[in-house]
Structure formats: C-alpha cells, structure tokens
Amino acid sequence: MKKIKDRIAKWSVLGLLAGVAATSLYAPTASAHGEKSQAAFMRMRTIHWFDLTWSKEKVNVNDFVEIKGKFHVFEGWPESVAEPDVSFLNIGIPGPVFIRKESYIGGQLVPRSVRLEIGKTYEFKVVLKARRPGDWHVHTMMNVQGGGPIIGPGKWITIEGSMGDFKNPITTLTGQTIDLEDYNLSNIYFWHFFWYAIGAAWMLYWCRRPIFMPRLLMTDAGRADELISSGDRKVAMGFTAATILIVIFAMSSANSKYPITIPLQAGTMRGIKPIEDHKATVAVKVEDASYRVPGRAMRMKLTITNNGSSAVRLGEFYTASVRFLDSDVLTDKTGYPEDLLAEDGLSVSDNSAIAPGETRTVEVQASDAAWEVYRLSDIIYDPDSRFAGLLFFFDAAGNREMVQIDAPLIPSFM
Ligand SMILES: [Cu+2]
Image (cartoon, rainbow, N blue to C red):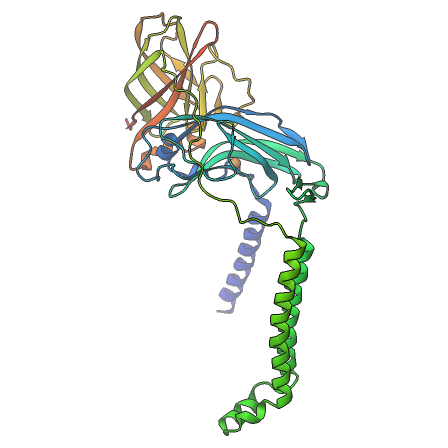
C-alpha cells in the first residue's frame, strides 16, 4: 500500500513539473487576433477591405502611421449581423499601443458612429500615433452595433523608443495647451483619496471602541440608546455638515476654475459620402464554386464578358482579407501582410487577355496556406455555405476594373 502511495506521489510531482515546464516554455505569438475564430461566411460576406496602404512599418514613440484604404459594404449582408446603420471605424490593437489621432471616411472626420449603406464603397484613412514600444499587429476594423467587430487585415508595425517620452498635446478652445496623457490625473487622485480618507475617518471614529459583542449584548438588553453619546451625535452632525459644505464649495470652485465646459459630444453621423459608383465594364458570372475538404484551395468556374474598350486579364481574387494574385498580371507593392498575400495563389485556366466584346469561361483556382491558416476552410461548419469576394481585372495600361462576385460554395469530399 505504502509503495503505491509513493508511486502516486512521485508521478504526480513529475506530472506537475512537466505541466509547469510545458506551459512556461511554450509561449506562441499569436498572428491573428480574433478574426480566425469568426465564421468564415461572415468574414466573406460583410466588409471587403482593399487598396490598403500603411505609411510605415517601423516608427518611434510619438511618430505617426497612416493607414489608408477602401472598404466595400457587401450587398448580401448576412441576416445574423445587424445592418451597419450604426458603425464605428475602429483599430484593432492590444490596448492603446497607438493612439488614434484622426480617422476619416470619405474625407469626413469620424470620431463618432456613422451610418454606412449596404452596397456602397467608402474611402477611409486612420492616423495613429505611436505610444508603446513593441511589435504590434494593427488591424483596421468596423464595429457594427448589433453585429460586433468586423476585422480587416492586420499588419505588424514596430514601435521603438520609450513610452515615457509619449506626449499627447491638445489645445482647448479656451486657449490652453494640455497633455492628455496625464491631464487632470492629480486632481482625480486628490479627490478620490480625500473622500476615501473621510470615509475611513468616519469608520475609525467608531472603531476605536469595542465593535461587536459588547454592542450586541447591550442592544439585546434594551440599552441601545446608551451606545450613542451626545458627543457622537455632534461628530455625526459635523461630518454631515462638512460633507455637504465641501461638496458645495468644491463644486463652485470647479465651476470657477473651469467656467467653460460642454457635454459629451455624441450622435451617429449620417450622410457619409461613398465613392461614386462606377459601373464595371467587365461582367462575371460564377457558374459554380467548390472547395476540397480538407484542402487549401477553392475553385470557381467563371464566365467573363469584357464590355470595355481594352483587353483585360484577371489579376486578383480577394476574399476575407486574403489576396490571391496571378503574378503574371499583378505584383503587390503595398507591403500587404505576408500571411494574407498569396503572391501566386491565383491560377486561371486561360488568362490570356480577353478582348473587348469577348466572353470566355475559365476555371479559376485560388490556393494558399492562408485558406487553412485563416480558417476559411471552416466554412464547412457554417450555416450558410456561400462566399463573396472581389475580382480585379487589369488592362495592358494597368487600369483596373473591380467586380464583386457572390455565389454558393459547395464542398467536395471525394
Ligand atoms: Cu492581429
């Protein structure tokens, strides 16, 4: 019996050590931050982010980074996500490692929620100011009331320097320049400490005498009145009067020190300007689309008609942040996040130029590890097996035509 007990003890100590070692030595860096676990069909069928640029990949504390781009609000918005009537252009970062200095949609400053229209394309710009040193994965994202976060592509940006140097100056309309990083902090410390101290003093006043048993017995014996003396009453009145007086005095002194104050500014902004609609000169019909389970690719059969005046080739298919390019037609020069860029992930059965007026049916395959890494393959678990995306066609001069596609996506198991 003793032997078995010893053995159990020995093995549990070993197990504990192994557990501690495994958890303390294994510290993976997350490369995506939330989007992978979202339903694939929702990522494909809500917002399409494209033409993204990042002004810098490495900055010092207090430097600015500008993220620009466009987003298209997909026509076939899912029922399970509320329509983007109240949306907020946000930035996905682990806390304020940057501060958001400015954000614009359609040239308009958007510090508040906005109303977006389904089917429209908008231009946006976000200006960030570096605050905390480190390597940060920065996402543009849209918060939709009743829908949650819709996360765009994330890019690693390095901040160097020391957070102690960070400054956030603003000039108020009363002509005073303050640093928002520590403005009003000492005042908040003072008043909270002050009232905590008064609360503690009130408790201390009573706790100097025996607190529980003698008082319980006195009260039970019907002598409760003797527990509160006339001196106690005076002290209580003093506390009451002082509290009210301090509140009134402090309020009037706050009013005289800050005579001009305004309420919090809020309210959804409507009338945000989308990019002018442009009727695509290329028409695409998805005949069918499928993907292998398991697998890293999806394929589509597309009937493409060129209604334009110059010959075009298919250069890119975008879905859910992943860009599949045909390197013969398009190479990325924007520094798009590597894990989301399939530089040669798009293969078209016949990608010779489609002449004006010509119609051609082609087999297109979009394949990359990102399909699995970003769990687009998990559409097999979704209750709506339809995809959506953007196709980009280019003519010889480099002019681009964007066509949105949307079709059922059928798994194939054999
Ligand atoms: Cu991330």
